[in-house]
Length: 582
Image (cartoon, rainbow, N blue to C red; front, top):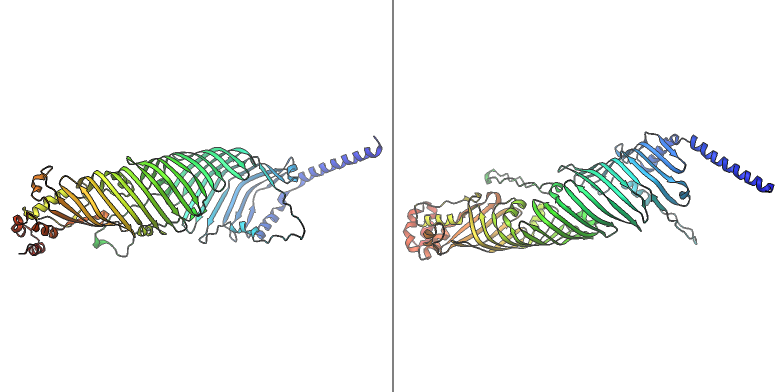
């Protein structure tokens, strides 16, 4: 070996040894904690927030460039209130790939994270200034004729581990507060074309209405060209969920749930207060209203399929739920959908437009048992029977009451082998006979709240035209052994009240209880008017109209003299006199 080469190699070796020794001395003597004050000062100058590093900063230089820090807090802007804090964090980046513009991270570990996210009444978040900071800076102008070539940055993270974390969220405009506590997250490799395993668990809480639910999931995920897809199994309280999804707009998903009680998470609807007598009601008191805000749907662009074995929502109990869901541009369609409920089936479509807070619903209910359905959903026990119900309605508004007032569309009902509860038409007919020729007078202003009283029917049909929340009917047709029932009137949905005139027409029959007695009144029509709120419904028999019809009928001559003698009410006697021409 010639001397120049020998000396050159010796010199190069010496430089390498010196460089390594220098790096080792630097690593052993460098103390990053000397710069904590400068780091905190720069954070204050750049963000207007207070950064506090209470623990030591620990550095590693070989074989990876890493850092660990403990006891860090970061405040709200221009405030001492805490925004983010964590007990400890550690991350390391491999050195050689870093020189090639590749960020290959061995692992990221975070423990004891606490974050407080607030959405203000103006729609801005308490971190908006951090996100918008760089966006507000003008981009540097490129020199004329110069070509800019962006060097792609490659991210490759071996794993992420987060434990003992908690995240609080407050929406000041909606008055809602949520909390994720005891958050645990573990992932595998995060990189282009990588696959990994995922584990997640948390306890979700809501302040009002109060809620606490445990969620855990595990599964696998895949990354391609910026798209995340996953196949997971999850447990939400008593619900077992299997789901597949792809996070690339439009988001695609397919989920299967064995059972789900949405009422637990939505919060039970407030039960209406018991109706008070008119004299006790305060005219200044108004019914509490609930806001309806569909705006969160505006940011959703997704489509997929949902299956639920057993579902409970707003008191309704459904089974074998199948639904196709499409969401885009603030519009969400749950169509088609189908399910079994109350011994029958339901099929139809629901369309929600968040741009104008509008809901459209079309449903076909077949062979359902309406009694338990009304008791569960509307908390009303007025009707029994099995049959079909058709709904085609729309509503819009910023609150529940506003939606009720805007309700419009059509509805049809066809039932069989049922009963109307709270009133006994057969008993009213017997009282009508008494009033026309017996020994007692029939009472007025009777309550229709006694559920032991009922009117059986073999068949009932009715259709409704709904406008501004009022359902109007003119074609009631009900059949029973002793009578036929027709009628017309209104159901005021916002006021939860009824104003309806039913007409019971007697048919000639000697069958059934009281049949022989009522045969003598065959052909007579007895008008019964129902008025008042659903919870305090009253009915009156229109004897004046009935007496007028009786006078024109075949039995009019037989009861002409008995009417004046038996009816005790002075007004009614005078009215009857006029109708009978006396």
